Amino acid sequence: MAQQETSYDTVFGKMAVEQGLCTDTELRRSLGELKARSKVNPTMLRDIMVELGYITESQSDRLKVSLKEQKAAAHRIPGYKILGKLGSGAMAIVYQARQLSLNRMVAIKVLPKRFSENPEYVERFYKEGQAAAKLNHTNIVQAYDVGQAGGYSYFVMEFVEGKTLYEDLSAGKIFSEKEATDVVIQVAHALAHAHARGLIHRDIKPKNIMTTTGGKVKLADMGLARETADIEAAQSEAGKAYGTPYYIAPEQIRGEIDIDGRADIYGLGATFYHIVTGRVPFMADNPSDVMRKHLRDPLVPPDHINTSLSAGISEVIEIMMAKRKKNRYKNVEELLIDLEAIRNGQMPLRAHSRMDVSVYRELEDGVDLEFEDDIFKREISQRYRMTIVVLSTVIAFAVLMIIILLVHLANR
Image 1 (cartoon, rainbow, N blue to C red):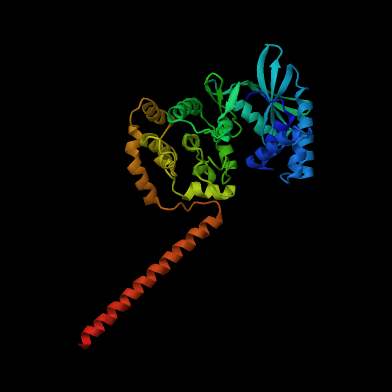
Image 2 (image 1 turned 90 degrees about the vertical axis):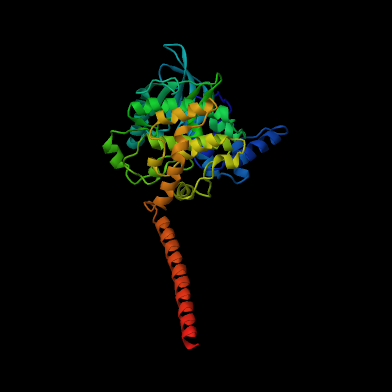
């Protein structure tokens, strides 16, 4: 799906990050050390990462075995010639291949054997393919086939020659207002197509948005997509937070059943925020704290971080990321009207008219107490109790002073 990366070390490093074994910063340091040492003595990235203490020897061995297994599995898929690795994720590796029957380039996502033997993972994998197959849009990566071979599950899709927004952000790029707006408009059109067919993506983020060498934007990875009409699936997922912490909508954090397209608008807003400011909307040391901030903390307006941004684009992002979905754009079509206005140098009238009402409603609604985490509830309760204690003390002191004053006046 992304530009071909034939380096074993590159794929190994990406897998380590995706599986949460090390951070992006640690990987960059390891790659820098690899480059420096290779001039003197050739070495492997995995050995350096173990030496630096970023991963353990056993973790390195598991990644090595996983890479070997998936490479072997990919070559067993009939009708395709594997040309190289494109990238990796927490659950799969993606390869570039040639479909022999049609002589066209494709991308093949292969599920590791340990997941392929788990019915739940296989079902989710197939659902991803089925969801993608329902969509046919220029801004969505097209699905071609899903199947099994040699005990491995695979998913064949359109090959996109380009890169993800995440790769640009990792390289330190901050998008201009014009460039970012154009990207978001194309993703919004993709979402409008999906929503019209009853599908919500639920995982909009820079890693799932690609730009081709020709400037076309493609929305990828339908792994968490769900049909809005699938009540059974919604009920089975009730109370569980599906999504990526940095970009997840509050209602997804709470595991609400009636998730709709406005959750994707929030995720797109968080992505919009990231690409124009160079930072995620909410940062914390662990995922649960990040999600708590999505639920509770006010959003720092993006034009306060990147002062070159217009007030209009900041308003649009703030409405997209309203904590309560009723305060966001009601659908992608409404959002697109404002995005087009921004692109044409005009004020986003819908965001502008919603701005004061949205802020008032969020203040009026107060802190959201519908947290799944009991710790959040206790923290808020403690703050309220402390406030009541302070107010009670102040009032008692004031009453006492009034009584003393009255007694003093009576004795005169």
